[in-house]
Image 1 (cartoon, one colour):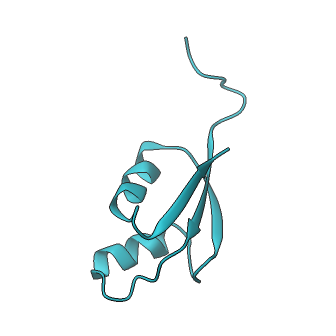
Image 2 (cartoon, rainbow, N blue to C red; image 1 turned 90 degrees about the vertical axis):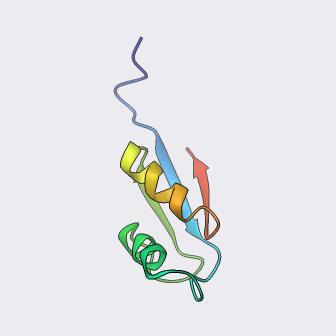
Length: 66
Protein backbone atom coordinates (compact mmCIF):
# COMPACT_ATOMS: atom_id res chain seq x y z
CA UNK A 1 0.00 0.00 0.00
CA UNK A 2 1.12 3.51 -0.71
CA UNK A 3 1.80 5.97 2.08
CA UNK A 4 -0.74 8.73 2.68
CA UNK A 5 -0.73 10.49 -0.74
CA UNK A 6 -2.48 13.64 0.52
CA UNK A 7 0.18 14.60 3.06
CA UNK A 8 3.83 14.11 2.01
CA UNK A 9 6.43 13.69 4.73
CA UNK A 10 8.23 16.87 5.67
CA UNK A 11 11.73 17.35 7.10
CA UNK A 12 12.74 20.26 9.33
CA UNK A 13 16.48 20.86 8.77
CA UNK A 14 18.49 23.08 11.12
CA UNK A 15 22.11 24.09 10.50
CA UNK A 16 23.84 23.56 13.87
CA UNK A 17 27.60 23.44 13.18
CA UNK A 18 29.81 25.75 11.13
CA UNK A 19 31.14 24.46 7.80
CA UNK A 20 34.50 26.22 8.29
CA UNK A 21 37.26 23.67 7.79
CA UNK A 22 35.08 21.34 5.71
CA UNK A 23 35.22 20.82 1.95
CA UNK A 24 33.72 23.22 -0.57
CA UNK A 25 31.35 20.45 -1.68
CA UNK A 26 29.87 20.24 1.82
CA UNK A 27 29.53 24.02 1.98
CA UNK A 28 27.78 23.95 -1.40
CA UNK A 29 25.41 21.25 -0.16
CA UNK A 30 24.49 23.40 2.86
CA UNK A 31 23.74 26.31 0.49
CA UNK A 32 21.75 24.05 -1.86
CA UNK A 33 19.55 23.02 1.05
CA UNK A 34 18.64 26.70 1.41
CA UNK A 35 20.63 27.30 4.59
CA UNK A 36 22.34 30.69 4.77
CA UNK A 37 23.03 31.32 8.49
CA UNK A 38 23.96 29.11 11.42
CA UNK A 39 20.92 27.99 13.46
CA UNK A 40 18.63 28.67 10.50
CA UNK A 41 15.84 26.16 9.90
CA UNK A 42 14.32 25.22 6.53
CA UNK A 43 11.54 22.81 5.64
CA UNK A 44 11.83 20.39 2.72
CA UNK A 45 9.71 17.56 1.40
CA UNK A 46 11.19 14.13 2.14
CA UNK A 47 12.66 13.02 -1.20
CA UNK A 48 15.59 10.74 -2.07
CA UNK A 49 17.56 13.74 -3.37
CA UNK A 50 17.18 15.65 -0.09
CA UNK A 51 18.02 12.51 1.92
CA UNK A 52 21.23 12.09 -0.10
CA UNK A 53 22.23 15.70 0.55
CA UNK A 54 21.55 15.27 4.26
CA UNK A 55 23.65 12.11 4.38
CA UNK A 56 26.65 14.11 3.12
CA UNK A 57 26.33 16.86 5.76
CA UNK A 58 24.71 14.95 8.65
CA UNK A 59 27.49 16.11 11.00
CA UNK A 60 26.55 19.77 10.35
CA UNK A 61 22.76 19.67 10.54
CA UNK A 62 19.92 18.43 12.76
CA UNK A 63 16.97 16.77 11.03
CA UNK A 64 13.48 16.31 12.46
CA UNK A 65 10.63 14.51 10.71
CA UNK A 66 7.17 16.02 10.82
